[in-house]
Length: 115
Image 1 (cartoon, rainbow, N blue to C red):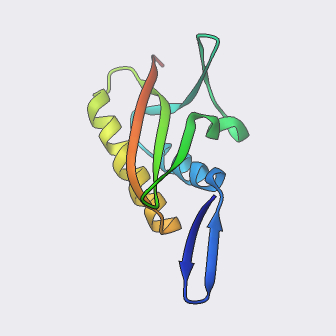
Image 2: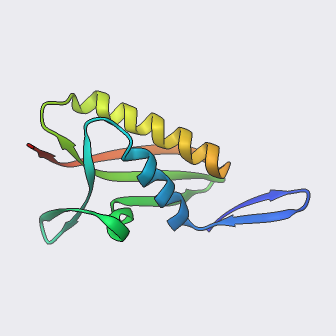
Image 3: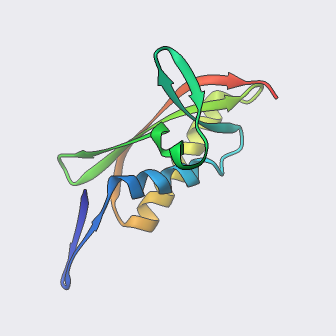
């Protein structure tokens, strides 16, 4: 649970909320097919309510958060550029919507999909 304190009290933001914001921001990126979840060596494309399983949010000691995304990208796109775009979009969205500081975002490419 992430907490922001101001002169009126405090605001608690659950990690699941941060994961949902990160998921929605990432899905707006060109070249991203979706988020993935790896179970028993099989990569599964996540949809609907389970989509945030592909996002891991962790609190870091210095009152910041680290986000890890497991993604499936579109074949033919530049993986590095798409990953950079996802990182920028997620960082901006999470920091703007929650006022939490994001210290690190890791992108784990779990697969490439041909349409």
